[in-house]
Image (cartoon, helix red, strand yellow):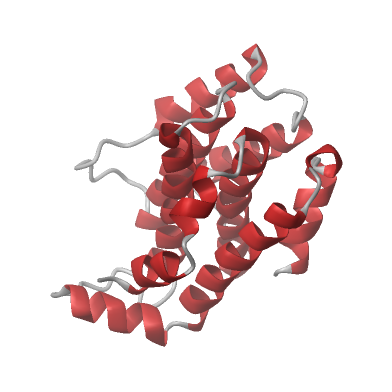
Length: 199
């Protein structure tokens, strides 16, 4: 089992997401992707790609509409725009793997943000967004463009990477903070402050 999967299972993340509710789940999903994007942006040198710039724009636009825009046409439009940039599962486009993972994470999170009811499928979208955010960090850090021959090689790379371990621990702690927060106090400023304090 890969290290992220093992830690997420140990922290009972899936079961906790199942009972979180749509508002907090959206904050969690988009927050995880935003956190990963922030870490990659901070470590990047040179110009960002068009796709990375689009991810930044999508997330910035989302947070200006959270939580009032959830389930509304503006968020649905944003979700469609993000989905239009998603690569196919087997596409080998001009973008780095971390960018592909980020746009997948954004798409899962925004799909969740279009929902008005919270279902197990919605909770799965939140988990998938967190998963893609983590793998964006993994593909950016340990050894970029490294080929791993076995699952055990990947697991060892995860466990040896300070950035990967930090991202997993962030995702677990971030969920705990959202679980404790009163829903009526949840807004973009509060979530972004939690993300910025974890950098």
